[in-house]
Length: 286
Ligand code: AMP
Ligand code: ZN
Ligand code: FE
Ligand code: FE
Image (spheres, rainbow, N blue to C red):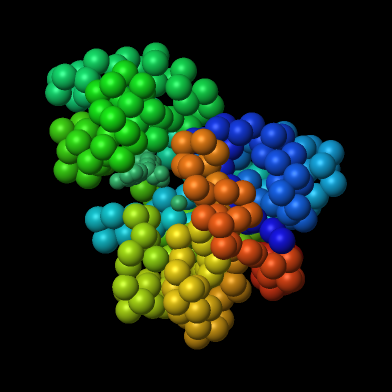
């Protein structure tokens, strides 16, 4: 079994990249991808950790791209994380995040939640600082009872301290991933929060496939058996390689376990062959 979508302390996960590798080995996984949001800072430690643990490490990253006023998520797998243009886009995204965080903290203070930029940076620890970290602080300082309420009352879309952030276009993200010899996979195709209709997912995948999308997460923690079957049919229809991951974040997202998701997730090793065949195409061109 494998897991091709996980987060570490380099973004908003709670395990360090090397701990993640160890834990994957303990869970019986044979291959693991680290796909932190907007950074590749954890990859070197992660690859060393995987070698140490005796499992196959796959360098990855997760981007949010703009989509009809909202966003969709694209995971890059088998990337060369030293690639210049890939790193430049990630840096641009993080620069915009830094400015957005200043505005968000100012708005929170105005609205009555006293938090500081210093606290926020400390909470994040790494170079990617965002709303999941703000939510942790709001809960800890008792401005709200839980993470969900933090988004519902303070920082979710339309809330008093909501600030939009810069999102690259899907075609730019896919292009940078390919340029770095990696494959672009649509993450959680049924949405985040989960719940898009099959018809809408089909339209999105059709469009992304025309832009060069390589794969789609058929197996995902929140998928019902029907959604998994639908995603597999759509993958076939648009010639996309099926992928799968838990979206493990550690203790901030309880119930999403490494490799196991909410208990029933099983991602077979043999998906790797199809994904690697796609990656070979881009590696040859990069
Ligand atoms: P950011 O990239 O800083 O805008 O933060 C986005 C992340 O916040 C997403 O990847 C989710 O993990 C989390 N998130 C966004 N909206 C919600 C929500 N309504 N409830 C809980 N978590 C959310
Ligand atoms: Zn996350
Ligand atoms: Fe995501
Ligand atoms: Fe994720």
